[in-house]
Image (cartoon, rainbow, N blue to C red; front, side, top):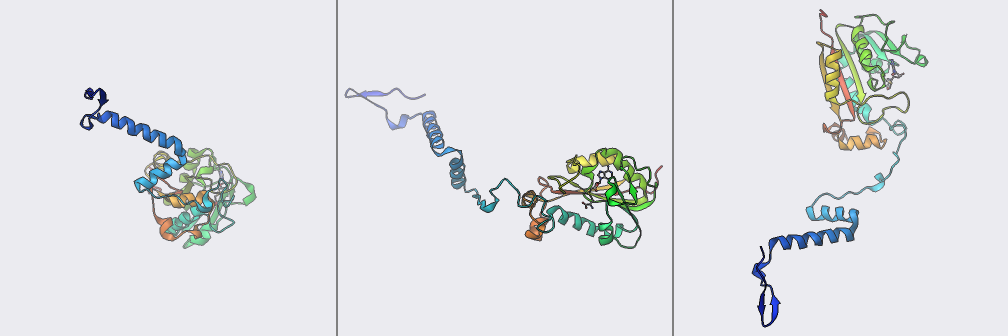
Amino acid sequence: MGQAPRRLGGSRVTPPDVIDVKDVRDVSHRGRARLKSILGPRLTVLARCVTRGLPLTRWGNLRRVEPFSRSFGFDRGTPVDRYYLEKFLDANRALISGRVLEVQVPSYTRRFGEGVIESHTVDINPRFQTTYTCDLADGSPIPSDHYDCFLAPNTLQHLLDLRVALRTMLRVVRPGGTLLASAAMLLPLIPEGGDYWRVTPDGWRSILEAEWPRCEITVQGHGNCLSAAAAMYGLAHEELKAAELDAYDPRYPVLITIRGRKPMATT
Ligand SMILES: C[S@@+](CC[C@H](N)C(=O)[O-])C[C@H]1O[C@@H](n2cnc3c(N)ncnc32)[C@H](O)[C@@H]1O
């Protein structure tokens, strides 16, 4: 409580030792509110960053609402997500061997396969003239327990009937065989085609544990805020340094890679 002002020689004075702390807070709060309203929201944030020593943003030519590329960087170089996909396939070369089935075209089988004895393809779209033209949710033309490796690069987000398609993928791989796949997390990876799912690493673990029971499953996110922003802007991964691409921040995965190993005995 503030002390009552005393009368001295007929005039009211308030001695400095009786100033109420609450009054001071109120005055400084009102002062800050007035300063904010004078500065406006943009300059208020700038002032806050300066006074708190927070880094300032220099947008350069990133202050734009259109990406640099409308085709995810294909026109500039290699899209950012392909950096992570290709590293993943490179690390798993030894598993891309024997009988390999790849979605759409056998490009990654050719590039990363080792000791491939049979290279087949599958796609729902007849344009690609694949070994099997079918929906993976059906998959009836594909033999069971046949392939050593199923390669589904950047495909899972396109599978409308995802869970049934995942069961087909497991069915056609031999016991002990491998499934290698990747999925979009942040943005579309190709300019065309139905694009249905964005599943987090935890979401994939949960789905795959249900649809690929008793398989050894490894799910990994890739990316960080810089590579995510670069991917969003349609930049090519060649425009970033390897260390910038390799830093992993689980809050900003650009791509998710999946490796599953079918159990030897299915009983
Ligand atoms: C993004 S491509 C993946 C492979 C491509 N080589 C790549 O690396 O981007 C996805 C392919 O999945 C095919 N696809 C979509 N839904 C499918 C389904 N239900 N069954 C089989 N293929 C499907 C599409 O026609 C498309 O060719």
